[in-house]
Length: 177
Length: 149
Figure 1 (cartoon, rainbow over the protein chains, first blue to last red):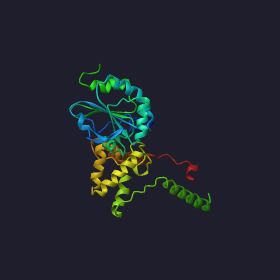
Figure 2: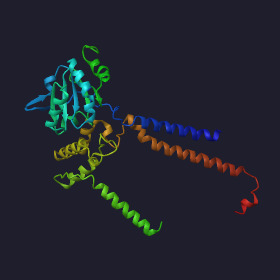
Figure 3: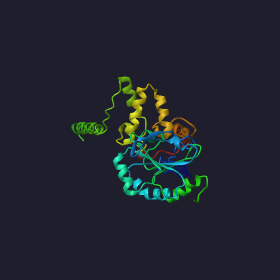
Figure 4: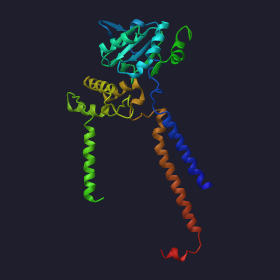
Protein backbone atom coordinates (compact mmCIF):
# COMPACT_ATOMS: atom_id res chain seq x y z
CA UNK A 1 0.00 0.00 0.00
CA UNK A 2 2.71 2.38 1.09
CA UNK A 3 4.50 1.60 -2.17
CA UNK A 4 1.66 3.07 -4.20
CA UNK A 5 0.82 5.96 -1.94
CA UNK A 6 3.59 8.30 -3.13
CA UNK A 7 3.02 7.76 -6.88
CA UNK A 8 -0.70 8.26 -6.39
CA UNK A 9 -0.12 11.46 -4.45
CA UNK A 10 2.28 12.74 -7.12
CA UNK A 11 -0.20 11.84 -9.83
CA UNK A 12 -3.02 13.59 -7.97
CA UNK A 13 -0.89 16.70 -7.48
CA UNK A 14 0.06 16.79 -11.18
CA UNK A 15 -3.53 16.19 -12.25
CA UNK A 16 -4.57 19.04 -9.96
CA UNK A 17 -2.03 21.43 -11.46
CA UNK A 18 -3.06 20.49 -15.00
CA UNK A 19 -6.76 20.75 -14.17
CA UNK A 20 -6.33 24.25 -12.79
CA UNK A 21 -4.18 25.14 -15.81
CA UNK A 22 -6.74 23.94 -18.31
CA UNK A 23 -9.62 25.45 -16.36
CA UNK A 24 -8.00 28.88 -16.21
CA UNK A 25 -6.23 28.88 -19.54
CA UNK A 26 -6.63 32.26 -21.21
CA UNK A 27 -10.32 31.89 -21.77
CA UNK A 28 -12.01 34.56 -23.84
CA UNK A 29 -14.50 35.41 -21.12
CA UNK A 30 -12.06 35.38 -18.20
CA UNK A 31 -9.23 37.48 -19.59
CA UNK A 32 -9.16 40.64 -17.55
CA UNK A 33 -8.31 43.86 -19.34
CA UNK A 34 -4.97 45.34 -18.32
CA UNK A 35 -6.60 48.76 -18.68
CA UNK A 36 -8.77 48.38 -15.57
CA UNK A 37 -8.23 51.35 -13.27
CA UNK A 38 -6.16 53.10 -15.94
CA UNK A 39 -7.11 56.09 -18.10
CA UNK A 40 -9.16 55.16 -21.15
CA UNK A 41 -6.95 55.73 -24.22
CA UNK A 42 -8.03 58.95 -25.93
CA UNK A 43 -9.05 58.76 -29.56
CA UNK A 44 -10.38 60.96 -32.30
CA UNK A 45 -12.13 59.22 -35.17
CA UNK A 46 -14.54 60.05 -38.00
CA UNK A 47 -18.23 59.81 -37.17
CA UNK A 48 -20.12 57.08 -39.02
CA UNK A 49 -22.35 58.59 -41.69
CA UNK A 50 -20.65 61.98 -41.56
CA UNK A 51 -16.94 61.66 -42.31
CA UNK A 52 -16.51 65.44 -42.11
CA UNK A 53 -17.23 65.27 -38.37
CA UNK A 54 -14.81 63.86 -35.85
CA UNK A 55 -15.70 62.31 -32.54
CA UNK A 56 -13.18 62.79 -29.75
CA UNK A 57 -13.34 60.78 -26.56
CA UNK A 58 -12.46 64.03 -24.77
CA UNK A 59 -15.98 65.26 -25.50
CA UNK A 60 -17.15 62.87 -22.78
CA UNK A 61 -14.60 63.93 -20.17
CA UNK A 62 -16.08 64.37 -16.72
CA UNK A 63 -18.96 61.93 -17.18
CA UNK A 64 -19.24 58.17 -17.31
CA UNK A 65 -19.63 56.55 -20.72
CA UNK A 66 -19.77 53.15 -22.32
CA UNK A 67 -17.94 51.99 -25.42
CA UNK A 68 -19.23 49.04 -27.42
CA UNK A 69 -16.91 47.52 -30.04
CA UNK A 70 -18.84 46.06 -32.95
CA UNK A 71 -18.80 45.20 -36.63
CA UNK A 72 -21.34 43.97 -39.12
CA UNK A 73 -19.14 40.88 -39.65
CA UNK A 74 -19.60 39.92 -36.00
CA UNK A 75 -22.30 37.37 -35.24
CA UNK A 76 -22.38 37.97 -31.48
CA UNK A 77 -22.92 41.68 -32.17
CA UNK A 78 -26.19 40.87 -33.85
CA UNK A 79 -27.17 38.71 -30.89
CA UNK A 80 -26.52 41.51 -28.39
CA UNK A 81 -28.17 44.20 -30.50
CA UNK A 82 -31.61 43.85 -28.89
CA UNK A 83 -30.07 44.16 -25.43
CA UNK A 84 -28.15 47.27 -26.51
CA UNK A 85 -31.32 48.86 -27.87
CA UNK A 86 -33.10 48.22 -24.56
CA UNK A 87 -30.16 49.69 -22.62
CA UNK A 88 -30.05 52.73 -24.89
CA UNK A 89 -33.78 53.17 -24.33
CA UNK A 90 -33.10 53.72 -20.61
CA UNK A 91 -30.97 56.71 -21.69
CA UNK A 92 -28.75 56.66 -18.61
CA UNK A 93 -25.28 56.87 -20.10
CA UNK A 94 -23.81 57.71 -23.52
CA UNK A 95 -23.01 54.58 -25.54
CA UNK A 96 -20.21 55.11 -28.02
CA UNK A 97 -20.10 52.54 -30.79
CA UNK A 98 -16.64 51.68 -32.07
CA UNK A 99 -17.21 50.32 -35.55
CA UNK A 100 -14.18 48.04 -35.84
CA UNK A 101 -12.64 47.02 -39.18
CA UNK A 102 -15.93 47.44 -40.98
CA UNK A 103 -17.36 49.08 -44.07
CA UNK A 104 -19.30 52.29 -43.53
CA UNK A 105 -22.07 51.36 -45.96
CA UNK A 106 -22.64 47.99 -44.28
CA UNK A 107 -22.57 49.57 -40.82
CA UNK A 108 -25.11 52.26 -41.79
CA UNK A 109 -27.39 49.65 -43.31
CA UNK A 110 -27.14 47.54 -40.14
CA UNK A 111 -28.18 50.49 -37.98
CA UNK A 112 -31.05 51.54 -40.22
CA UNK A 113 -32.39 47.97 -40.33
CA UNK A 114 -31.89 46.92 -36.71
CA UNK A 115 -32.08 50.28 -34.95
CA UNK A 116 -29.34 52.47 -33.55
CA UNK A 117 -28.50 52.11 -29.85
CA UNK A 118 -25.48 54.41 -30.07
CA UNK A 119 -25.12 58.02 -29.02
CA UNK A 120 -22.40 58.26 -31.63
CA UNK A 121 -20.53 55.72 -33.76
CA UNK A 122 -16.81 56.25 -34.29
CA UNK A 123 -15.23 54.56 -37.31
CA UNK A 124 -12.11 52.58 -36.46
CA UNK A 125 -11.40 51.29 -39.95
CA UNK A 126 -7.76 50.40 -39.43
CA UNK A 127 -8.29 49.06 -35.92
CA UNK A 128 -5.81 51.33 -34.13
CA UNK A 129 -8.16 52.46 -31.39
CA UNK A 130 -9.28 48.87 -30.81
CA UNK A 131 -5.64 47.88 -30.31
CA UNK A 132 -5.15 50.76 -27.86
CA UNK A 133 -8.03 49.29 -25.85
CA UNK A 134 -6.63 45.77 -26.05
CA UNK A 135 -9.64 44.55 -28.02
CA UNK A 136 -9.21 41.03 -29.35
CA UNK A 137 -12.69 40.12 -30.49
CA UNK A 138 -16.01 41.82 -30.97
CA UNK A 139 -18.22 42.46 -29.20
CA UNK A 140 -16.44 44.01 -26.25
CA UNK A 141 -17.96 46.65 -24.01
CA UNK A 142 -16.02 49.05 -21.78
CA UNK A 143 -17.20 51.16 -18.88
CA UNK A 144 -15.33 54.44 -18.40
CA UNK A 145 -16.05 56.39 -15.22
CA UNK A 146 -16.38 60.16 -14.74
CA UNK A 147 -12.64 60.36 -14.02
CA UNK A 148 -11.87 58.85 -17.41
CA UNK A 149 -10.72 55.52 -15.95
CA UNK A 150 -11.65 52.17 -17.46
CA UNK A 151 -13.60 50.34 -14.75
CA UNK A 152 -14.88 47.29 -16.55
CA UNK A 153 -14.57 45.36 -19.78
CA UNK A 154 -17.13 42.78 -20.86
CA UNK A 155 -16.13 40.34 -23.59
CA UNK A 156 -18.93 38.78 -25.61
CA UNK A 157 -22.57 39.63 -26.11
CA UNK A 158 -24.11 42.18 -23.75
CA UNK A 159 -27.16 41.00 -21.85
CA UNK A 160 -29.60 42.73 -19.51
CA UNK A 161 -28.09 40.80 -16.57
CA UNK A 162 -24.51 41.77 -17.38
CA UNK A 163 -25.63 45.34 -17.87
CA UNK A 164 -27.35 45.56 -14.48
CA UNK A 165 -24.60 43.74 -12.60
CA UNK A 166 -21.47 45.29 -14.10
CA UNK A 167 -22.44 48.52 -15.82
CA UNK A 168 -25.58 50.08 -14.32
CA UNK A 169 -24.24 49.38 -10.82
CA UNK A 170 -21.22 51.57 -11.59
CA UNK A 171 -23.34 54.55 -12.55
CA UNK A 172 -23.62 57.34 -9.96
CA UNK A 173 -27.24 56.49 -9.14
CA UNK A 174 -26.63 52.76 -8.83
CA UNK A 175 -28.49 49.79 -10.19
CA UNK A 176 -32.06 50.94 -10.73
CA UNK A 177 -33.08 53.67 -13.17
CA UNK B 1 9.66 0.17 -43.09
CA UNK B 2 12.52 0.02 -45.58
CA UNK B 3 15.08 2.78 -45.82
CA UNK B 4 13.63 3.83 -49.16
CA UNK B 5 10.16 4.13 -47.73
CA UNK B 6 11.49 6.09 -44.79
CA UNK B 7 13.26 8.52 -47.10
CA UNK B 8 10.07 8.98 -49.09
CA UNK B 9 8.05 9.55 -45.96
CA UNK B 10 10.48 12.19 -44.71
CA UNK B 11 10.48 13.86 -48.11
CA UNK B 12 6.67 13.89 -48.18
CA UNK B 13 6.58 15.41 -44.69
CA UNK B 14 8.99 18.15 -45.75
CA UNK B 15 6.88 18.97 -48.79
CA UNK B 16 3.79 19.06 -46.59
CA UNK B 17 5.49 21.27 -44.03
CA UNK B 18 6.55 23.79 -46.67
CA UNK B 19 3.15 23.80 -48.34
CA UNK B 20 1.53 24.55 -44.96
CA UNK B 21 3.92 27.44 -44.49
CA UNK B 22 2.69 28.81 -47.78
CA UNK B 23 -0.68 29.60 -46.24
CA UNK B 24 0.86 32.23 -44.03
CA UNK B 25 2.35 34.55 -46.60
CA UNK B 26 3.38 37.82 -45.07
CA UNK B 27 4.41 40.30 -47.72
CA UNK B 28 5.55 43.02 -45.32
CA UNK B 29 8.84 44.45 -46.53
CA UNK B 30 10.93 46.60 -44.23
CA UNK B 31 13.59 49.11 -45.32
CA UNK B 32 16.56 46.89 -44.52
CA UNK B 33 17.50 43.31 -43.77
CA UNK B 34 18.21 43.94 -40.09
CA UNK B 35 14.72 45.36 -39.54
CA UNK B 36 13.24 42.52 -41.58
CA UNK B 37 15.00 39.97 -39.37
CA UNK B 38 13.77 41.69 -36.18
CA UNK B 39 10.27 41.90 -37.67
CA UNK B 40 10.27 38.16 -38.28
CA UNK B 41 11.53 37.45 -34.78
CA UNK B 42 9.08 39.79 -33.03
CA UNK B 43 5.98 38.72 -34.92
CA UNK B 44 6.75 35.15 -33.83
CA UNK B 45 6.87 36.27 -30.19
CA UNK B 46 3.34 37.66 -29.89
CA UNK B 47 0.21 35.63 -29.40
CA UNK B 48 -2.70 36.18 -31.72
CA UNK B 49 -5.22 37.08 -29.04
CA UNK B 50 -8.15 35.93 -31.13
CA UNK B 51 -6.86 32.44 -31.89
CA UNK B 52 -4.62 32.07 -28.81
CA UNK B 53 -2.32 29.30 -30.01
CA UNK B 54 -1.04 31.07 -33.09
CA UNK B 55 1.53 33.81 -33.24
CA UNK B 56 0.58 37.01 -35.00
CA UNK B 57 3.05 35.94 -37.71
CA UNK B 58 1.03 32.90 -38.74
CA UNK B 59 -2.52 33.98 -38.04
CA UNK B 60 -4.84 35.03 -40.84
CA UNK B 61 -7.08 37.04 -38.47
CA UNK B 62 -7.55 40.76 -39.12
CA UNK B 63 -6.34 41.77 -35.67
CA UNK B 64 -3.09 39.84 -36.24
CA UNK B 65 -2.45 41.71 -39.47
CA UNK B 66 -3.15 45.00 -37.65
CA UNK B 67 -0.63 44.03 -34.97
CA UNK B 68 1.95 43.05 -37.60
CA UNK B 69 1.43 46.46 -39.18
CA UNK B 70 2.05 48.08 -35.79
CA UNK B 71 5.24 46.05 -35.31
CA UNK B 72 6.47 47.10 -38.77
CA UNK B 73 5.64 50.75 -38.09
CA UNK B 74 7.29 50.79 -34.67
CA UNK B 75 10.43 49.14 -36.08
CA UNK B 76 10.59 51.68 -38.90
CA UNK B 77 10.13 54.44 -36.33
CA UNK B 78 13.31 53.20 -34.64
CA UNK B 79 11.78 51.56 -31.56
CA UNK B 80 13.74 48.85 -29.79
CA UNK B 81 12.49 45.27 -29.45
CA UNK B 82 11.80 45.86 -25.75
CA UNK B 83 9.81 49.02 -26.50
CA UNK B 84 7.69 47.07 -28.97
CA UNK B 85 7.14 44.28 -26.41
CA UNK B 86 6.12 46.94 -23.88
CA UNK B 87 3.70 48.42 -26.43
CA UNK B 88 1.98 45.04 -26.77
CA UNK B 89 1.97 44.22 -23.04
CA UNK B 90 0.59 47.67 -22.17
CA UNK B 91 -2.45 46.90 -24.32
CA UNK B 92 -2.95 43.17 -24.01
CA UNK B 93 -1.07 42.15 -20.87
CA UNK B 94 1.64 39.53 -20.43
CA UNK B 95 -0.64 36.94 -22.00
CA UNK B 96 0.34 38.27 -25.43
CA UNK B 97 3.93 37.10 -24.90
CA UNK B 98 4.51 33.45 -25.77
CA UNK B 99 7.46 33.43 -23.39
CA UNK B 100 6.11 34.58 -20.02
CA UNK B 101 8.32 37.10 -18.22
CA UNK B 102 9.86 36.05 -14.90
CA UNK B 103 7.65 37.88 -12.40
CA UNK B 104 6.14 36.80 -9.07
CA UNK B 105 2.96 35.37 -10.60
CA UNK B 106 4.82 33.35 -13.23
CA UNK B 107 7.80 32.28 -11.11
CA UNK B 108 6.41 28.78 -10.59
CA UNK B 109 6.23 28.25 -14.35
CA UNK B 110 9.97 28.76 -14.51
CA UNK B 111 10.81 26.97 -11.26
CA UNK B 112 8.64 23.88 -11.78
CA UNK B 113 10.83 22.07 -14.35
CA UNK B 114 13.95 22.67 -12.25
CA UNK B 115 12.20 21.42 -9.11
CA UNK B 116 10.82 18.42 -10.99
CA UNK B 117 14.30 17.43 -12.21
CA UNK B 118 15.68 17.78 -8.67
CA UNK B 119 12.81 15.76 -7.20
CA UNK B 120 13.36 13.06 -9.83
CA UNK B 121 17.10 12.96 -9.08
CA UNK B 122 16.47 12.64 -5.33
CA UNK B 123 13.93 9.85 -5.85
CA UNK B 124 16.38 8.09 -8.18
CA UNK B 125 19.23 8.29 -5.64
CA UNK B 126 16.97 7.02 -2.83
CA UNK B 127 15.83 4.02 -4.89
CA UNK B 128 19.36 3.09 -6.01
CA UNK B 129 20.66 3.40 -2.43
CA UNK B 130 17.85 1.28 -1.04
CA UNK B 131 18.42 -1.43 -3.64
CA UNK B 132 22.18 -1.51 -3.18
CA UNK B 133 21.58 -1.93 0.55
CA UNK B 134 19.22 -4.82 -0.26
CA UNK B 135 21.93 -6.51 -2.33
CA UNK B 136 24.45 -6.06 0.48
CA UNK B 137 22.13 -7.65 3.05
CA UNK B 138 20.74 -10.33 0.72
CA UNK B 139 22.48 -13.63 1.54
CA UNK B 140 19.91 -15.89 -0.07
CA UNK B 141 21.23 -18.45 -2.51
CA UNK B 142 20.75 -17.62 -6.14
CA UNK B 143 18.37 -20.05 -7.78
CA UNK B 144 20.14 -22.37 -10.26
CA UNK B 145 17.98 -21.44 -13.27
CA UNK B 146 18.40 -17.76 -12.51
CA UNK B 147 22.17 -18.17 -12.25
CA UNK B 148 22.36 -19.98 -15.55
CA UNK B 149 20.63 -17.16 -17.43
